[in-house]
Amino acid sequence: MKNEVDNGKGGIALEAGVVLKMQGICMTFPGVKALEGVDLTLKKGEIRALMGENGAGKSTLIKCLTGVNKFEAGEIYLEGFDHPIVNKDTMDAQKKGISTVYQEVNLCPNLSVAENLYIGREPLTKLGTVNRKAMNRQAAALMKQLELDVDVTRNLEEYSLALQQMIAIARAVDMDCKVLILDEPTSSLDDREVEKLFTMMRRLKEKGVGIIFVTHFLEQVYAVCDGITVLRNGQLVGEYEIADLPRVKLVAAMMGKDFDDLASIKPESTGDKRKEPMVIEARGLSHAGTIKPFDLDIHKGEVIGLTGLLGSGRSELARAIYGADRAQTGTLKVKGKEVKVKNPIDAMHLGMGLLPDDRKAEGIVADLSVRENIILAIQAKQGILKKIPMAKQCEIADKYIDLLQIKCASRETLIKQLSGGNQQKVILARWLATNPDFLILDEPTRGIDIGTKTEIQKLVLKLADEGKSLIFISSEIEEMLRTCNRMAVLRDGQKVGEIDEADMNQMNVMKAIAGGEQ
Image (cartoon, rainbow, N blue to C red; front, side, top):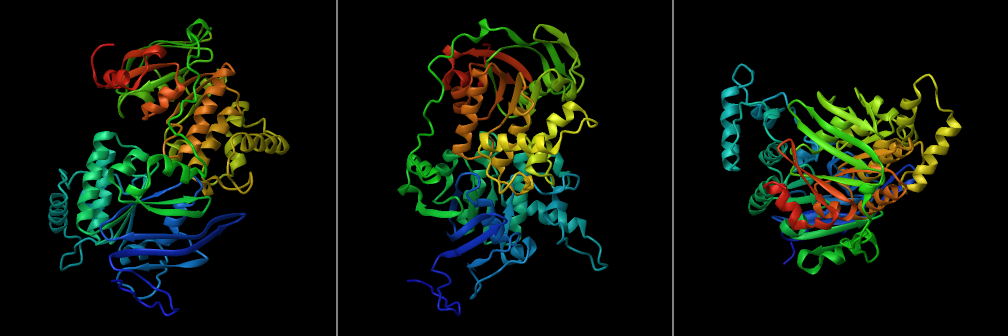
């Protein structure tokens, strides 16, 4: 039997067991229809995946729900309200029981766990000061309830990213949330940490919390979710039960065409690249505390994969070559000539480029336009006194917007208005515009959709065909196998082996990562 509530307009607010219903949501940005008549239904105690390619409208829909965006049409119904709700801001949404935990943990690392849990709602003494004893006691009880082994008096920054995510979720849960939105919470976690997060999600599900899980990882969707809502180009494709939507059909729904996400895009054999001239020759390079001395050779037109668990030293190895972390021992030769790379600008002048793994902190300049972000590296290379003429800037920007199919209203659109995948393409465009001989791509496909992933993978192979050398770092082994000629294996800050193309398969890589001499 449906629990129907008249919304005063003859519409039906909520069915029995439903905690949230969004109907006909429309939202327009300048020049872009971001959402067009989108629906989403979430039941109590349901984990629902919200999926779609970058630019599909997932983030926009979440922002409409949490009061960040002011939507133009549509209605939102929430359990406990007999009329459509509109949240003025995220605080208003929280008060109503809608909490969001983002990919980048938005807590205060220099405060204790307890302070983060109760920020803005601290228990007070009779004198109106913060009752720290009571706060710590409440925080410890909450951690125990959620089975988290955390000392609440220690600063948040002392804990891993995974635990910080869970503390952010604990804060949301303690605020009596009915709806918990997890926006790409697993993108920086390893498999064990993901499993801990899933355990917590299942616990919250049992308590009746409705969870919207925004992710790009298909395996995770099928591991933990009950239903899937798929968006494409700002429109609803459909809402499905997990059992009714096999993996291949999900991909087809997201992309709007049949698409085998596991199809090989690499030719059977790319030939022995080690016969080609040497581009990078590292001997005994190291950086104290991050990467132990390593040797690495990279040839012209070769794609070298760096694999290992999170924290194994993949990014650190690349940064030591690039000069982002200055190497303290060893030598580096570029095209046979010994060089000193003291900082990234030295590396750029030697024909190198680095696409960093943290696009928000180290990649994009949020308040600049797409055009300005694209020309940044060329301008830095030329020097601030040799300003690139505007006509040339526009020409470069347009070329790469077209080449990489960057979805933006115009080249003057602020980069912060773009989806994560399109931001990533802009940073990639920035480095391609410098025409590098050697390009380091650190997690270039993290947090982006299957279609864009495949585009980037194909681009990597195209660049290699053109004679460019690349380091490719990814947490997804499948992706590495599809793009790399050879893989270097890292463990605990040390390069422990290499795997040749002939021996590159899932099992061999897993064995190498797990341990044992190669």
